[in-house]
Length: 311
Image (cartoon, rainbow, N blue to C red):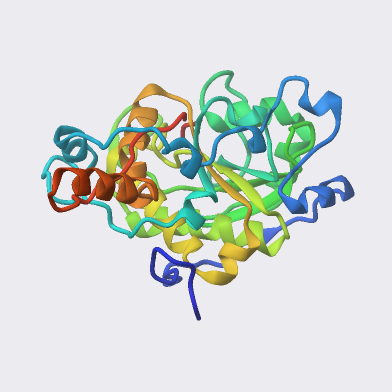
């Protein structure tokens, strides 16, 4: 199978079958990406079409410093170089946005769910709580009927009162110390990048299966589930880059939004984006500068972006 420029075909070795519940007829209009012409929908919402895509966002951004590259690579200073060749086509299909994921007018959003898919009713507790509150009780009723599911698996439900017609509920892997009801440690779970990757790949596959062309992804497992943010961010971006490198996936998708909410994930994603989605502008800029100075063109990548969420 051929692939768009800038990366290998997607690795599906961690794919898991996903469950689906039919969405309401109103969601059919979002198959082209979740666009809405309703004034009521847009009153407090942000259309993904109004946010700069990654190619646009990197036009005037500086080359990352050595310290920034080392931070994004985990500190060794070596793996901070881009893993992929610059691809304007792929960079136009991703964006980094910080904000409330429930405010996005988009085809679908990812919800970091718990295994029973029962939702969360604790105010301001996690992204699951925020999404359930904004969508109304119907969302929890719909998702709970499809549970339980395991780490890496996902289901899809209508968005109900949300600005998006679909919600893709995915369970990420738990990590770190686990406690029982008495506060005693019962397990110490190591990071599981395979299950984390599966959560992203399966969500994207389920989006495509339902004819939805856009999705906002949260920072899966990095909140209440305790997954370390740096490796989690790398897994997320690697999964998206690989998925988009498949020509059929690429053609079926309009936009994938990396949505962050807290400052830590926002700054991390700003450093990681140039590694997995190196600027298609930077090579030309570097070559022009090198030509003017009579030197060789260095390998450069743009950094930054405007960036929403946790569990």
